[in-house]
Image (cartoon, rainbow, N blue to C red; front, side, top):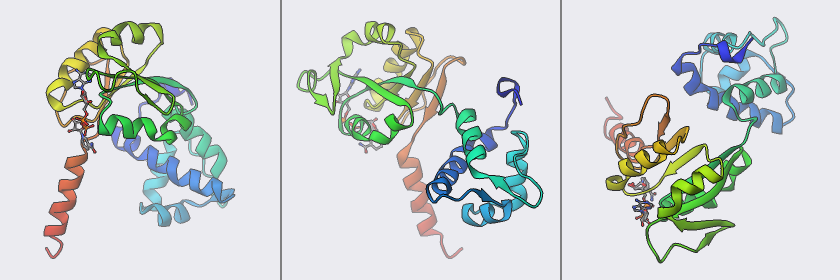
Length: 212
Ligand code: NAI
């Protein structure tokens, strides 16, 4: 199927990283094939949901055989764009920015941290692993010179929108926003938020309503 012409629902797209994760685990265990029933058991989805989801990509399952784990994994990698590399920058080199810079698995997945930016003179010039913290004043020229595709916002929420505006002006393609604020960006810029406290507060709700 031509990937560019595929129209996949957002609900399926949101599940793809989960398929990716489980298939990777299966590959690491050297499991070559799996039925939709087995996959449904480990993933906590129904077998028919799995068949429906995977039919979006041309139906990899074969009656009586199940899914070829490696082929399906590679297809999903391709659909997710994880077979490519992306140059990224982290804006805000505080606690979270440094934690993200220290986490090597994003890099292994193809998201290459090229630089970090901050306004705090105490941080500028330091290195996290081999990633230099640079003066945020130079962010625009750096983005243009280094083919940066993704900006990761780790500033306080008060600064996040102005950082996003600057990234947009430099034709950034995607923003991964950790600041607890809803950013306004033009439609052509892909914005993905990680609001950790929303997830934590959902946990809190569930803890407090577990008997209902
Ligand atoms: P932090 O205060 O340690 O780091 C923020 C950094 O952003 C500072 O170094 C500051 O100098 C820099 N900064 C401020 N304005 C800037 C600008 N215009 N350009 C570049 N850098 C700028 O804060 P922390 O804990 O790292 O949090 C960062 C963001 O992530 C906040 O919005 C916070 O609410 C959110 N967050 C953090 C979590 C965490 O685990 N640390 C968890 C959930 C959300």
